[in-house]
Length: 342
Image 1 (spheres, rainbow, N blue to C red):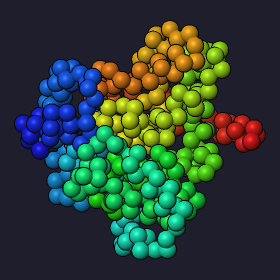
Image 2 (cartoon, rainbow, N blue to C red):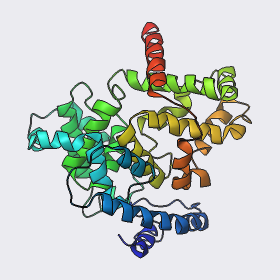
Image 3 (cartoon, helix red, strand yellow):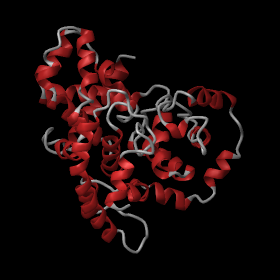
């Protein structure tokens, strides 16, 4: 997409709709967005040229130091699906299992699974024009297919609320059911194991890990929450369950997901720590539990969250050193405590 076309797309197909189909709220700051995007447009143009050179000749995108660096600086929308599929291993899985997705769709029906999915269809992005029943084509049917196929593929998980939002975003980017299915499998099966099973042990563990990281790096914030008896699950569960969907602006979510598919789950901790550190002074002004909850809602809004390019640079500097060995060690201790407390 040329820069001029990007600028036009950024204004959406209507006066209040963004390029991904989301209706902008009445209080959307158009002036601030235009000021940010006028600069970001130049970044997108430079990145598009570099990615076009890197991907010349086609073929699967493979992990490398160069690809990792390029991903951190942003993947152009036109290459995003291909890059996600390559670096996550989803493309390799799809190539190994030709026809598998279609066989899942034609497989044995599960009434309880399908009913659970149908219940959430109208709740999935009601503010997105592409998911409305009046849309042509409407993405509700592909979304149902992807979730039903995944529930049959991974019976230990089935369907869990939150997966609908993730699969919805995958469809918006890939526009292809089978690719969205295999990317969902990469997330749920490998990158975020045990996040969406019945016990959600991986999700609960990682929320506790974040609490430990905040205690180590931002002790005043940890003391505030401890002093008011606030569990981390109360303020960050949606960040983890929906991978920042519906909390951060869509372009920022996609930049985060670029790195999530490339570098794994530690990216979630980097984003969470950056948000908390950047807004530490505001959070520490809270004087009650409702006030703390409101502060955590506010920190995902505003110019810092919207300016995705600066935001992504910050997540690799603000939290400081965050080796996977530290996360693994914390996961082991937090998981043991959760299991002991069952």
